[in-house]
Amino acid sequence: MANRIFGMTFDEIQALQQGRDIHPKIDVNALGDYGADPIGDGTFRMVPSGDIVDYAERCRRLKR
Image 1 (cartoon, helix red, strand yellow):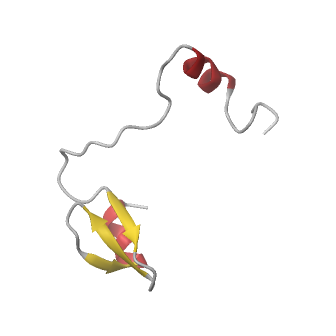
Image 2 (cartoon, one colour):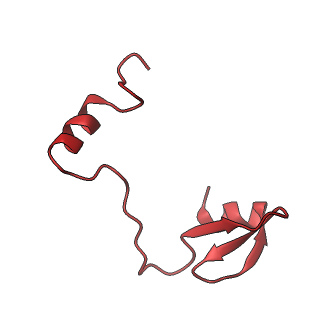
């Protein structure tokens, strides 16, 4: 991590200085779920389907 300043690489800092966005884009038009909100009892509400799933299913759907 010697090549990072405040957790960002020099290229990321340079991009931010030039007004470019460094965060990955989420394609909301793609089929399937692209996010999950924790409910608090160990389950998650999938976005945008709204299905309530456990952690293992959340990871499978988000491919993580």
